[in-house]
Length: 634
Image (tube, one colour):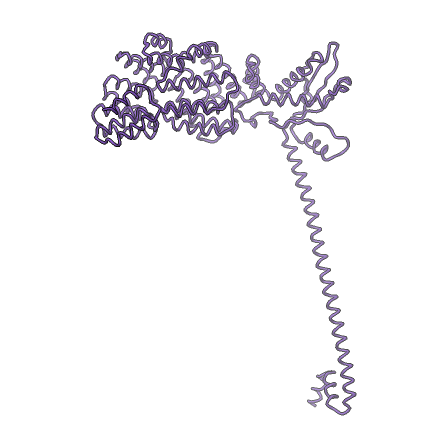
């Protein structure tokens, strides 16, 4: 029973095996062959079915992938359309630009090529020209109605297009300033009107030959209506101050607080240019009341005080401006104006305390920027006097000779004057004296502002030049015409008296100069120089110490302090001062001359010879050159 069960469990293969082992072997073999063929057919069928099933599965997977890809593509296209439409809507909603539409023109003008599109393009060109002549430190984003540089001509499309749809969006959602207008015939010629939106606008009339002028007048009318502050600045920039003043006054009366403060700055510039300095300072006070800590009010105040050589007041204003510049940028100032203004203020502050190397470093940063409101040119000219103040004659000459070509005669004359002034600082008065009459005539012809420069900045150095040449009669005649509330004027009076050995007068004027500028080192340094000339070494050292406290990077008091110590037979202490001065003015010939003398006094002959050689190789004054030859011989 057990064996039967096992045979039945074996199936057909078991029967085939039994038949193979039993009698009738041929028949069993045939059966086995047939079973083998059947099995192979079944296997082939199964494999074919498996292949078909795998192929179907691949097709199903590919179809699914294609379906997913299609759905993703559709989603991506929808997203792109949505993003594009959103960008168009956002762009339209934030559009504050200016759009000039095609003008209506008479048929005879259109037949001559002066179509409505051409007239609109001409108006657009005039508006762009006006804007290019409007140079201001104010940030365009601070204007209530700013269309910036986004000025475009709109020529309508025919039919429906994406461009027309986009324009419709900008018109519907945006805040564009749209200009339309017409040119029409009059009994005497033509008339031009440019209209802002639906507002009324002046009409300008003239002959056909006046068309370009009439379009410019219409452009100015549009500029005035849409950009009142810019229009006032434009008028001032092109010298039309009589028209600029009422434009500023209208803003002061009716503008926003920002417009009022900036209009006061613009009006102050006009007052300062005509030398109404009292009125200008009052306007700056008003601007600062409207906008406390308004940096432009301090910058302009510093400039006015500088015209008078009111060194202490100018320094205080610059200090306040620098404090403001250390904080966040005033959003009403453009980024360019903020950066350039801060660098200029730092350079000015460095010069105020005698740190001329720092001043030149700041000038380098300014000169690396594109020109803005003449500040790059000012920095280049200040390099010339900065090197001269470091007693570096070669540096001053290189700064002058490396300036790019000037584009007008006045600029060339200004540069020549700066160079002559630098030579005067280096005790070479020849250039200044040779050009004295030319400069004096030029300044006198500039009106009250020029006369103020004569009294406070030019005449003191003319007087000093005469004194250097030994002509004390003319020196007193010129210095007596200078202001008595000017630090530079007071110090020069003291120097001239000292050169004549009028020590009482020298001390009197020097004391007044230091009282007038108590925070700055220059007047104290000059007084120390006078006392050193007098032979009062202890008194001189006290003044040099006071100067050094106020200007620790100012080389002059350090070098002369060393000279005073050398005169007191303290060469080692003198060398210490010379070494310190050398950090700030390494190319000062007299410094190395006196340093060599101190070394020689200590018997350090080789080191002394090296310093004498250094002095001889630098720009050296005739007096110092003579002293150097005498010392070398001895």
